[in-house]
Length: 409
Image (tube, rainbow, N blue to C red; front, side, top):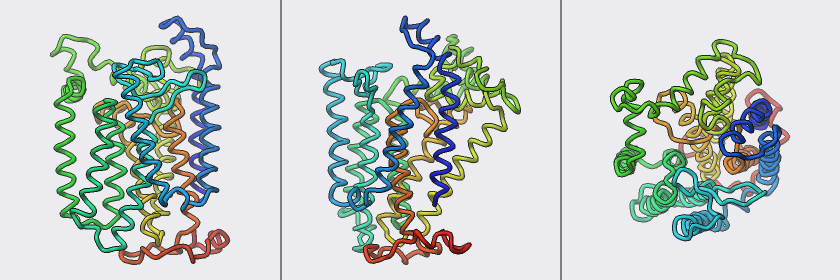
């Protein structure tokens, strides 16, 4: 499935082009607002470094045999995720050390000086993905996938602890939703009974409402979304709906073909997080409706390629890994674009491979590298229910036959 490499490369290249154009504007805004001394090429240089690291991560997870990540070692990745999140909470919220980076009242990153920053919740998501894929794969092969005590309770405990770290300690509901998407994608593909899945969705919805209505800033975001443009008149505060208004202005200003690279007005300080969470709106201003449709087509093609791999994997654990990665990337794309177009409340989640920043790009690239490696073990046809589950250790790889015929991958 070399299409995965193609689509990922195009998205990374597009992100670099946009960052090269936006970098000077972002530097001017930061220097004026905070008295910093960023050069015109600072943000482009950082993004270029992030892309280089992402390519290395993709290569590592492609060349290192998947069993090294998906076996017993997966629990160490999970524990590393848990411990790093706990350490961040202790250093930031309790000890207030500079190593923990505070943003808008929340501690979500380790600040590593000249090396940048690291977001431990991304490591935790990757650990949950690898560990639960192996766990659910074993339960499916044992015929215990619907067993409440031996399967569903352990999955629920790990998911709940992960959400506690991300949503409660780090106050990051957007990343929490992404984690839920990973787990639900694997549960659905694992073969859990649909009645049980319905109950799980009910519990998830209830917990989501509790997390929203026990947090004033989340209630405010939901009310802003519900009341829309009338919210500023009803509350008398002009800035409640500011972010989404500026995002819509950016997308609307782009028209059909866009203003062109380097001509964004909203990125000069009007649109918050212009190179991070709001990059989709800036791209709408730059490339217009046609450009946004092309970006959506790239993401759609990438996600369909991932599904193509998952549908042809005989091994249950590998299929669950790919399904979880699909849920991971799809949730980021849907949440970010829906927020920027006013279809959902703002969540503060990056657009995969395009937004500025290194940690999310690093782990998504690593996940795609794993998918690319796993694609070598696919069958020549879509597998029907019940065909999966056999061990792949004795199967020959399909590298040479991938393009031998139209029905082959």
